[in-house]
Length: 176
Image 1 (tube, helix red, strand yellow):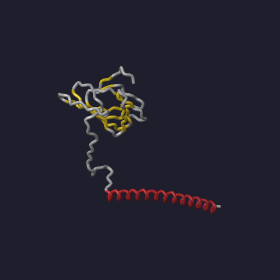
Image 2 (cartoon, one colour):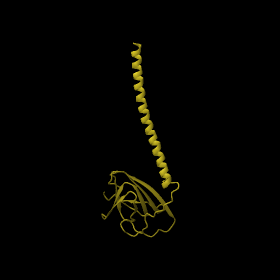
Image 3 (spheres, one colour):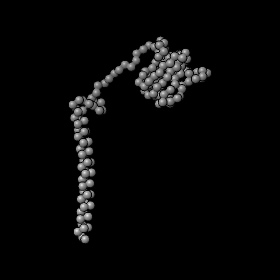
Image 4 (tube, one colour):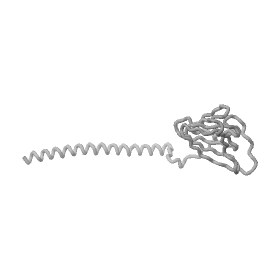
């Protein structure tokens, strides 16, 4: 009887060890594969000059726009006389929202960094801007913007203004 109990114990212990060894070796093979994969990636990166953090990359300068006209192809006005005041504004426009009708006294331009913005002039002319595009706004012409997309618009605008000059003049009397 003592022998039967030891054989069962021995059998259970053997099965447990076999299962444990299989799990251990499977795990270690995955670890080894991960280490080998990481080493291969590092070696390839060294040989091909791959640089993840960009520390050794060259500076890139890319002119995005050079124009003397607004987006609707109208010439921009001359610079005003006097001391300039440069203003930078970040606009966030949720999906489905519209800006009211307005016009700008100061020249301005900007970069759309997220979303899609539709600009509508009072005469009906439209421009659809997408992320990464640059826009030169209309000066002294009434227009408005709409976010017809599904994500918020993020727009950085830069105004060439003067002290006490409004960035825009609202026209609430014109219905959207």
